[in-house]
Length: 220
Image (cartoon, one colour):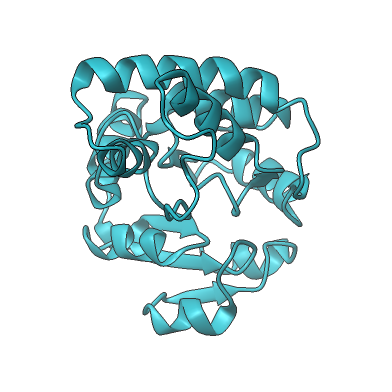
């Protein structure tokens, strides 16, 4: 997962999406009251558009996505009202994992692919991920693991048992999408959910953050 797990972008995504929606005669604060944590960009936009009395067909989705991505490329460079930072331990952990021949790193995010590249590119983290699954692939996050696996196999990732797949994220939605395919959910309380919240979802393991590299490597 990206937002709340790898990085925080200071609200750049929400600001960019609000600007995109305003271009289509929706409220300049169109996302107010719409849940965003752990949800795909596609389903967030669907909720916004339906609340405005319309339907998100493929044509409108494409236009909104293109505007959003263009605005995100601008907003990512502004400080915003929230924290903008890599989460604790992320650079070290990714460096170590990328250097192992028994680990394949992939993204599984609700972000549109172009948006994911902007967010991770800002922090120079995209280089760690050879492929992934994105909000372009499905509205339902629970459908994303199979997309990620298909692309990983195309990059040379061998067949493996579901319980050799770790899905790491900061929301109950991340836990649920792992459970949907028999993968192992690893939750981290660096987003908007506490350790107790995440334990209640049935995550196999919950970390306060990923600063203890050795503790994470022990999972492997």
